[in-house]
Length: 543
Image (cartoon, rainbow, N blue to C red; front, side, top):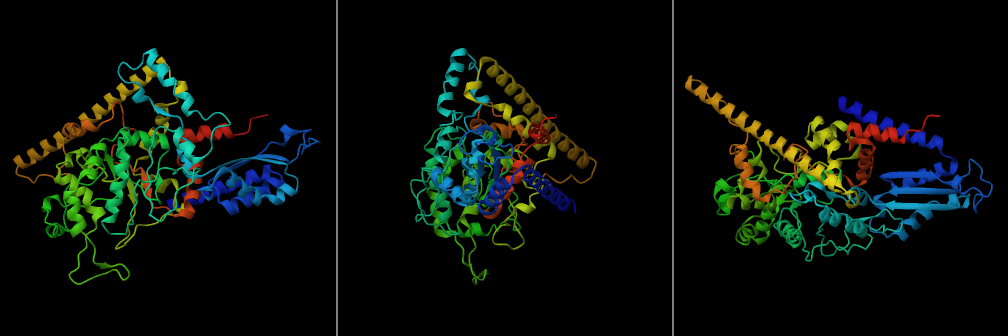
């Protein structure tokens, strides 16, 4: 009932906002809005009447207060994907030809795709914790950072608006795309232009070809020495946090998010399958194929040939994918659900994975909802994504999410804003956060010691010891930290509980992705304080 009320409340709020917008608009603006919403189903749509600025000019010679001659129209829609600015503008002009014939003299158009809009939040930003390294606050170093402003600035109206140019103007992410061999190359206006893997192969569900495709992605990504974290996503995934917070949290989680911890009983995966591959049962694990890897583990994946050959030969499915019936005596082995976890376990890398680093950690950064005996995960639609559901799929407490959303923007700076004072403040904040993290680790160790003392006291008194934690081989915090110390990014501090909050949602219905993005932009992606500030900023001034 609570979820239903939240969903209804959100829809009601959106309906009120749309009604308010329509009430302020003239008939031509309202007509344009309805047409654009119906045809393009935009993530974001803003129509601003600029007619008063052109009073006495061509198109608005009388300067009438209710004139509808000049508009700025900003649209974010996936319908623009793969189209250059001229093609996008032509789409809009064709849709609004009747309004143009009825008196609209000029349209200033801003046309973006949802992916571009999400990444635009990171445009030109740099992580302050990496700039404020020891000895890095000298005036000379500050000036070197400020010199980067020219290469990333997009404040000028002449900045290239294409997706490819946007990708070049941000410094936080590298994107790599593996498409089917027959898929056409992305145009220069796409965010994915030039980001295709150098080699592409045909893939099939439940086959080892999926592991081979991931290897191609990682191989190309490792060619750039600046890449430190590697997160695998599908075409139907959506990020659950703003671009800046997503980056900061990924960089602050040095352990790989892959499940390599026990128990590995029959309820989770059949250990007898290891016998068919001639592998030790103690190393036979199952993990989500959606991972976050450290650079060392990505290199291990790419360089492995021995275990890869075993899986390519012996790990396959003999299930009829039409009837979903197993052939008599058939084999059910899905490479992309086992290969990486087994590889890391066999290499002795379990201590450097999240399930060893933190008790209760998630073995994947991606939320997936599986139904009982379902071959494929649940596909979400936008109407389900209330604030309560969003918090559920994020797997974060409301307080933790609020705090992270309030803090993350202060850890990202634009080059032109960098100064000695800003550098020193960032260094002090990073040092303070490191002390907080150390205190939290000590608290974890103290709690573990208390549990051990309690168990020992019970045993000494002749009672039964309490059950161990759910993950049977969780390391003490200090030992786990040592296992991943060589992978840590200096100064990176997690803003969310490490390894426990989901970063990605899988999977979202394509026709619903835009509506979800609109919901996020209306407040679900913001903290309460940010939402209140945004509402206050957009409220009309008192007369």
